[in-house]
Amino acid sequence: MAGLKILLGFEVGTGEEVYMNLHHTVITGMTQLSGKTTTLEALISRSKKQAIAFKTKRGEGGFNNYIEIQPFFNQRADWQYVSSILEAVLREKMRFERPWIMRATKNTKTLREVLENIQQLRAESNPTTLAENVYTALEEYLKIVVPQIEKFEFSKKLMLHEGINVMDLTLMSVELQSLVIQSTMEFVISKLQDVIIIIPEAWEHLPQGRNTPVKLYAETFIRKGASIGNYLFIDSQDIAGIDKTPLRQCNNWILGRQREGHEVERVREQLGKTKFSADDIRTLPIGHFYAILGDEIKNVYVLPAGVPDELGKKVAKGEIDSSEVKKYLSNPGDENKKEAPIDVPQLLPAPNDTTLKRIEDLELKIIKIEKEASLLRSEFELLRRDITNINLKFNDIISIQKQDRKEDVVKIITENTTFNIDDLNLLVDQRMHQILKYDRPTTFVNIDVSSAFKNAIKDNILKQIAFNIRNIPKNTTTAAMLIHERKTMRRGELYGLLYSSMGKRMDDFYKDIQLLEEAKIINYNKDTGIIKWSLGEYLEKELGNLYDENTRNEFENYLTSLLLPANN
Image 1 (cartoon, rainbow, N blue to C red):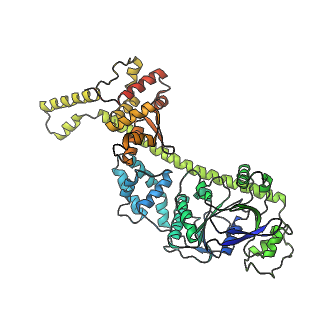
Image 2 (cartoon, helix red, strand yellow):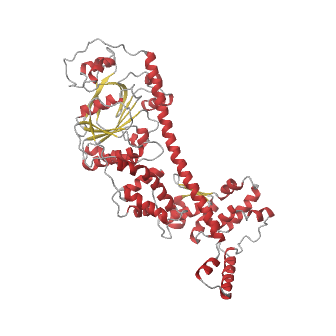
Image 3 (cartoon, rainbow, N blue to C red):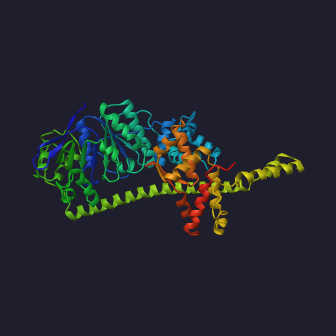
């Protein structure tokens, strides 16, 4: 089946047949006004392949001829699968978090068991650690999907029929829809061949700028699928919100009518702006598309399934209106049936321009509302993460304050039923040792400390930073001093200078980076790999309204000096 050619339709103007090679394909256009669903049904019908589609919205227009099948979901609880879920939630690649994920998934068979493990592990974790953050994020996500997984009845086997097989996911949350689609894709790649999977609402399941389980697996499906006849058809109202990685792998682009100005320009960019005007895109009739098929671009009328070839040619050549084919769509039959009547008069008047304009305006409003809803969902998730981080920072401050106040006298009194003069002497010795340890002189002995500096040193913010810096391990302080001198470094540069020669693993390197971030002295951008000295920026943010720049510089110099080894 490799290299299978399918009749797409007929070239507008000439009526010549247009064929496309079966490959990964993207189809865009305004809902109800472009003919995307009819196009998908026609391609699958003529390919003679099995296809899987997903219904994700209530009231969504469907195919004329399809079989509804029970949603398939193969529940997994291995650490690789749970790690991919966490990557989707946190929107970043997992690195040193894997040991915690492995611990959470140990001896589990369902996501419910994983959730219970995570809740126990989170309760046992210190509230200020990265492990607690990982467990919190996973717990919040699983709280959404696990009850739904238990609510719905899923098929354990994926039994497909020829033609279009539709899974109805309308009652599921977007999170569970993504898990079902990803599970289906994974089963098809590992067990089946010659299957087409249609990804609906691609801006939601293959979004630009964030991960989903579908998006993370789509690259694997595209890379492995074509060699065994499995293809991805991406269905979307527009191009804007879709991740570009899967789009780059699609050899066929079928682009329909658009009205919104930016989206019209994106379509022109794909086609070549000098060849097509904005009006060409805005005025495409229903069923008409600009098709990028490999290296060719065609203006084509897509022949719907069940419509005679001769009728399709007449529409493409402009001899009859596309509305003439509607009678064949409600009762699909043999598309090569030549005796089907062609010149039956219309019983209902064709919609006028005012009606079409109202439909277009309503469609644009629907698209805008759907995108706003998606943005609100994303903002809600970010707010929930911010609240979690704020609570963690608050608990961190409380624990530090408690640690400052806690004295060994508590331990002595609680462990001894009698308190004598020897105990008192021991307490004094221990306290003197603490004073000598934490209030030791630094190498910055000639700093002219102003009265403002003396007052500010008592401030909780400076005490917290000083406490964190004093507790940085010796090897890590070397990295901090190097970043201070360079001001900005690349991740690989720092690792090469200090860690590779020491034989340290990357996991240890990232832990050290995290320690310096928690101490508020550096900022690490995971996307660019840039590490920046940021203590001064942090002090300006926290104390800018209280102290002038010179005083803040004195604070920074003092705190930086704590990185140096103490005099013996």
